[in-house]
Image (cartoon, rainbow, N blue to C red; front, top):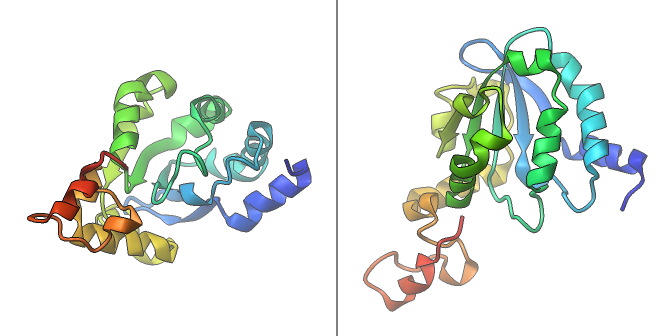
Length: 199
């Protein structure tokens, strides 16, 4: 485990949380890149402290939206866990919660959708679940967020391209596993490998 200072520097360096741009309604946007969250190396307390000192003060004055990029989030690598998510949510000051008007959830996999449909209402109180908007493609995100004002990592666009050619990945009906990548989606014995329910 890194020291508290090293953890804060890591959060800053990776730009996991970044207030950047506005949505189409003129609201500030907090961009969160799930893949960049090094869950194994960060303590819940350090993340809460970072959010309290660096992010929340910027969001308590006016309405804002969150763009959460779920692309390439792996449970074992960059998912902090249910109790950590609840702890982060509980640490949000009331003023900030009241100003949060929309959460755009980019590239939700089947597991994420099932998790939120099952537990979302219990974990996230105060109407947050009702503000959630699933966005399957980056192009659909631009219907809600100003395109030129928010940076997206290249892997997000790469994933979008994969989804264009293999749309069943959207629903977890086709794997993005390397051994089946590029295999025909139908009419092939190889496609049986791709029917695992993975998001």
